[in-house]
Amino acid sequence: MGNFVLQDLMAAGPIMRTVSLPRGRQTLHTMPTSAGYEIRADVSYDWDGRRRGLAPFTVLQHTIGGRGNLRYETRTMQLKPGETLLLLIPHNHRYWLEKGDRWEFFWMSMNGEEALRIHRSILAITGPVLHLQPVTIDRLASCCHRLVTGGETPGAASAIAYEAAMVLYDDVFGSHPTYAQEYRALQHVLEHIEGHLDQRLTVADLADVAGLSRAHFSRIFAASEGLPPAEFVLQKRLRRAAKLLTKTADMPVKEVAALCGFDDPNYFSKVFRRLYGTNPSDFRTSGMYASLTAAPRHEVN
DNA sequence: GGCATAAGCAGAGGTCGCGA
DNA sequence: TCGCGACCTCTGCTTATGCC
Image 1 (cartoon, rainbow, N blue to C red):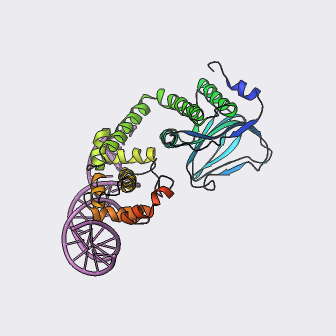
Image 2 (cartoon, helix red, strand yellow):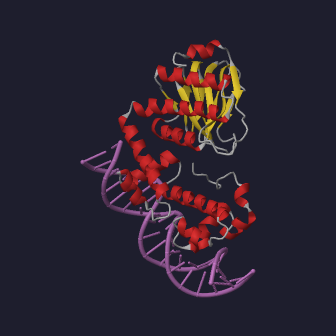
Image 3 (cartoon, chains in turn yellow, orange, green):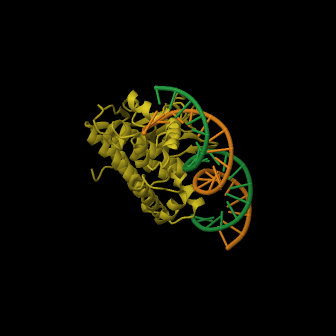
């Protein structure tokens, strides 16, 4: 697909596909949900980011011609040809078409923790409107075309969506050494958190790992991951605890707490209840974990 | 004995404004 | 862009008590 360009996608005419694949046993970290190329001229085209359900996903939409409108939190702007829209849902935004306007675009929607994490990192730096290089647009158009016409298995579809996420990553971070450095620092912190969940993890320690001051680290971490660092660590610990509780029926709750970095089982019980709505022992016996969508109410991606 | 709940408190965390 | 200090909020811990 090396020579695929945007014109090839447009040549096929308006087309879209909702990617609905059977759930595999393993959760894929990047999964497309829909893709397509459209020319819209009707005011019924109107999406509100707060009314599209609670399951998180992202929308990547490149404007080929015409124009669209975007309200992002309190700011309102127009999307012109050559501009690419990146949005996380749910979120306080709306994009729509005004009467008499025309909007030609291609888009890809995807979910999965890796897609969400990468797109959130990009959004934290660039905001929702991106100005990508022509070669990036062509590669994204190629991904979109292959999603619409192929990607029949979960693995194949996931690979295409992941490629699209990486193409975007290269464009944004590859051309901005400072952004790349910051991204790598946060990656290092995330790895540090994963490897030390059973130990004391203060925000000051994590800021040291990132090589930043506590206040600045807290600021960029929250912008990148969608949660302040302490809350992020807490949710990671509670997810690990939930898994341990259901997988190790003989392990005392206080031992599960200790393995997840909670020195005090009483405190563990308190925060566990806050997140899951029930105490650890009831959670274990009720089989709640299986009924959850593999995540607590406020998911850490 | 193991665990949950509640109250109280110290210190850590989040966030803002400001300056370099 | 980043660090620093200040201020307010809330987390994390201790202790006491009660239930199974």
